Amino acid sequence: MNTVILHQILLHSIGAFGGTLGYAFLLNAPMNTVLPASLTGLLGYVLYEVMVNLLGQGMIFSYFAATVVIAVICEIAARVMRMPSTIFLLTALVPLVPGYTFYCAMLAIVEHNGQAFASYGLEAVQIVAIIAVGAAVTSTLFRALTVRRRTSAR
Amino acid sequence: MQTLDQKEKQNIRIICLAAQMMLENGGETYRVEETAMRMAGGLGLEDVNVVAFPTSIFVNVDGRSRIRRITRRGTNTSRLARINDVSRRVEHGELNADEAETALNAIANDPGWRLSTLIVAYGVSAASFALLFGGTPGSLLAALAVGMLVQAVQPLFAHMAMGTLLFNFCGGFLTALLCQIASHVVSYGNVNAAIIGGIMPLLTGLLMTTAVRDTMYGDLISGIARALEALLLAACVALGVYVGLKTAIMTGGLPL
Image 1: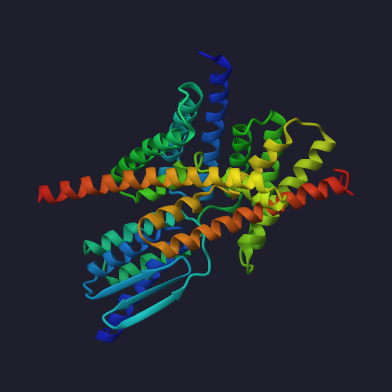
Image 2: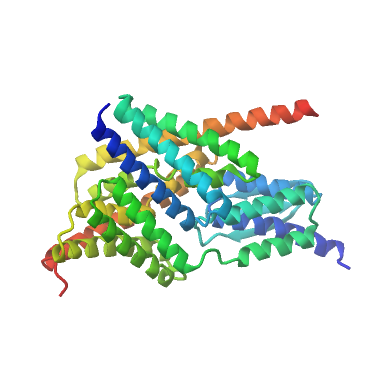
């Protein structure tokens, strides 16, 4: 195993956790959801880094897998704690969502750099789309499953 | 004793209030409409139509309608959770109309976290993101200090027209300018990581994810509107950073 990469992943995961934790307060998250959501965000981010850096998977697939794992945990947590899953998702997705890439694209426009805008913009749109698809697919599946269980129990 | 007319008016007012608060605090459009319909069912109303956009909401109950303009949009998940809770209890008949209205007003008047908590949270978040983008211990400290300052000036913009846009611009500007100047005073290593960490809490791109999810659920207009808002805010931050960096270079990186 490459210790440099492991060291980097460890540092990044501390950053991801702290960033999510702080952001949860900025989103005014309910107190009892802050820690579970931040830990979920950390787990998803570590999964993404491991898949990209150690397993050599493509960026888009790694984002998709990490989002699905995060969304599954958030849906379960939402049902256990009886809250909308959005509250967990909004916090837990923070380290994955490409705010930085959007910023780079916009900075490229300001600096009159068409090439950089095209590449950053495309990347940002790809990532956002795959994250939204991952989250939506998971929550739709969960909804279908729980509705069926409710009707069959009746 | 309320007349039937007043009762009807109150019901529609409650539904509208709940939907408006969800939109103002970052609820997805489909969830807003779902919550309003659920409350309407709990209050025993029939023939209810709810149309929600990020900027406005229309509620029609049996020919009587109410329209609300949404002027302030942010994210407050604690309020979302509490409104959801109220709507479920109304649905199951645990709350009547009066109690629901009192509960909703209480949620609206709850100010949330104190400013000092938010300042610390922004600082911690900024420093952590600086670490994520390969910052040195020095850039972590710079991001922490600048982040706390940015959140401290946020209340100045709260009641301004175009306040969010201006806050994003000023946040980017202050972060870039101060990080650059600080690096000339004390060389602390990775300046870019400090700047990116400092602006990350402004641009998490969550709006963009909500926009795509809205679009996928079929709320096309909401999706486009939210995507536009997300791009606009990111552009404001980028402009702020650009102007801040240029100002720092122009003044030779030293405070005049």
